[in-house]
Length: 178
Image (cartoon, rainbow, N blue to C red; front, side):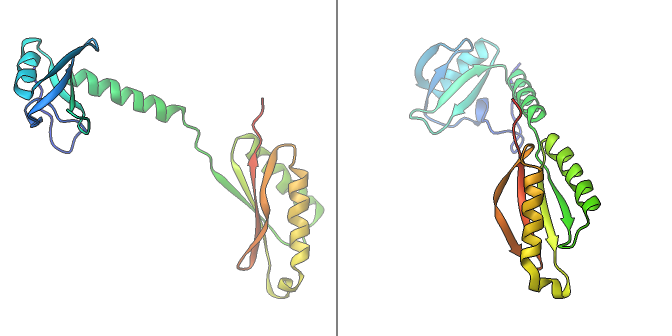
């Protein structure tokens, strides 16, 4: 079973693709076989019915390993899949309010933000100013600070409220439960 890798399909040079004059050879069980020419290493790979794979091209001399290339790529893909599966994707959920928000609406939006934080997502709370409301930025800041206080047991605030055009916003990240 002698494998020839296709260009662009992987990150490793295999068998005849290795063009270095001499390489450091590592056996399939991890033992060092020493420094030898690439031709000798290829001969040993053929004898053991394995592939010669370039593991570390930047080393002096480059390091090659005797392995079953198909099995090696399968295991690598399996590991990448496992890593991807265990990753937690954090989304940013936005909650929009006005400076003159009513108590019931405020409570409803706070309850939704708690749910988002419990799920492990970040919350971006923003207050939109329309028309003459721009003259009363302190009202919007007061709403955001009150919102952050209502959520302090579920999330922590990242910085102070900031103006972005006609919006004032604040980011709240979830607190890890132990």
